[in-house]
Image (cartoon, rainbow, N blue to C red; front, side):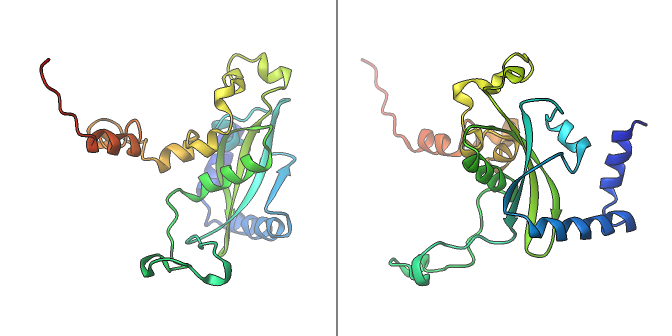
Length: 204
């Protein structure tokens, strides 16, 4: 087995003494840092490479902290001027997963970079931390590499905001194929429009 395989096996055994100790140290360290910050290197090199990271110019890693649990409605003084059905503040469930939210936050923060992918690194009772692989679309090393220069196209701007990354596609239900996805493709909204539109076809 190569070194990456050993790393992968270590990360699979998260309850082992070594990993529990490392997780405790990492959680303490991550809590002291800002919510979105750049890392000098990936915490999980094996996982980063699996999702597309390369240790060369034009690639960088950002670590993002996201609150766990339900989302909280952002209203002034906890007052919702509307119907009682919408008056809840705390128990709103997120439509997307926390990894997708983490990608969105770093994508907004670093507008000139493109979000390639992300992976989980740590969590405690309050937060989850994800590392997001970012690519500089104007770097000559990236632009000249045929494997990655698709991300330089203008249509790839803010993929994370449009649900095009792996985490976003999962939230949209697009991991399913065939008969299970008849109400999901090309998107749930498109299917709703298609089915609710009345077509009165007649012979002319």
